[in-house]
Amino acid sequence: MFSPDALKDRVVLITGGGSGLGFSMASRFLELGARVGLVGRTPARLTDALARLDAGDRAASAAADVREPEEVATALDRIEADIGELDTVVNCAAGNFLAATEDLSPRAFDAVVRTVLHGTFNVTSDAGRRFIRRGRGGDFLNIVTTYAWTGSAFVVPSAVAKAGVLALTRSLAVEWATYGIRVNAIAPGPFPTEGAWKALMPTPEVEAAARDRIPAGRFGEHEELGNLAAFLISRAAPFITGECVTIDGGEWLASGGEFNHFTRLPREDVKSILQRMRGG
Ligand code: HXC
Image (cartoon, rainbow, N blue to C red; front, side, top):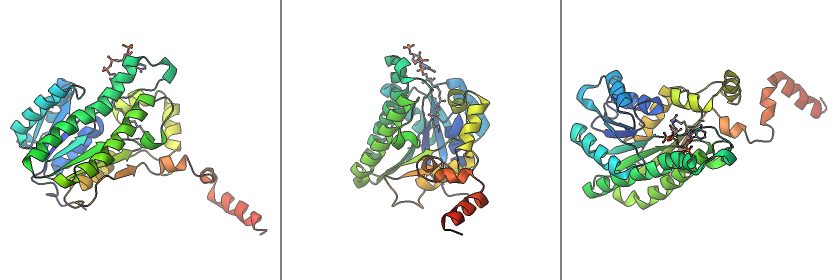
């Protein structure tokens, strides 16, 4: 599908790029010829990520907490000094944990919402000003989740923050189209990462139940997300903006439809029930 130079000459910033899905996207973008800058909170993790990417001067990193606008500005300056002026930003940095909402402290709510929503705003507004000033357009890709529109019990700070990021995506797609800036989102279902699994899959039983909810019968593979992200930021998709593409093996839709539970029965049993209903 992709030529090895599909992202040649592109300069991509990825927040949360030191680990998890951010790291996997960085790796895929590098394979396709991009230069990549990683931003994350933990310097040691960034150093380790750069070593694993092994991309020489096509990759750089800068430590910053996306909750702090000044740290974001400094990090973007450093990355641009190392790999050139950015044309693309992937907002992937996130915080999350399972908690009963009545037990959350205000600081706990803040820890997630300020990372996900304020962090995305801080990075997007800073990079957006750079793109607008330079007049060459740009691309944003925001990583949300399917419960951005359904909501979800036990992850309320994450759900409200991701809903905000989705609204920001659609709002800016319209507001900044005049500057040649596209703003899209991806809503992944469960993709195994160390961070998300530690925070969200407390036991093997919970993990098995999560897998069982997915009509495709499996979790996502990182390469699948990397390919979708590469397409959305690429020059193959210039008319796509304000879109949120779901990549979840059918998971979130399966939780809705009235008769979806029939899929849990052997298909032959379903067919014989339906045949009997027709009087056959
Ligand atoms: C309740 C918690 C808590 C928990 C922290 N807090 N963890 N409260 N349950 N499990 C509270 C603390 O008690 C404190 O409040 C406040 O949050 C701030 O804690 P800090 O440790 O100082 O915060 P900080 O280090 O800034 O951030 C904590 C964090 C972050 C948000 C948990 O470390 C984090 O998210 N790490 C995981 C990163 C990650 O895995 N990201 C991927 C998410 S995957 P008090 O009042 O006590 O001071 C994802 C996709 C979901 O989001 C989709 C799946 C399908």
